[in-house]
Length: 117
Image (cartoon, rainbow, N blue to C red; front, top):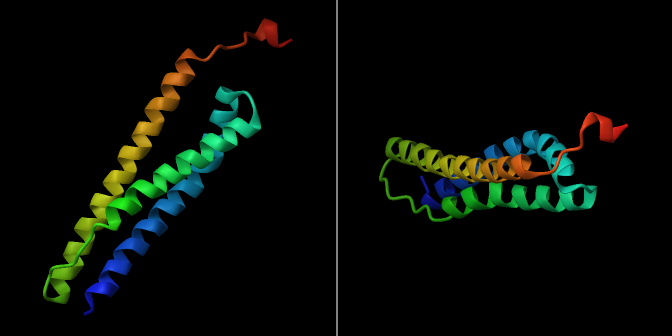
């Protein structure tokens, strides 16, 4: 088969998987960021920034792929290894964002129940 087709398949698989996970995480991340940032506009900016990082890093990794296998079986396993590497990049970006959000959640000032009333 054509190596360009396999390249496109690897990129599309990476984008679809990352896009679905980002879509699932977006409302939860946005709620946490609204709490941390204080305003909806600030939270929207950081949500969009996080989405770009979570999709952009694996996509950047995916674009470095150059198929070198000679038959369909080798290409299949080569693509699975590459998609696995791309998703590892996604998880590293997710952990990085999680650590940053966790750090700021720990140092963010909290209102007590008495202050909220």
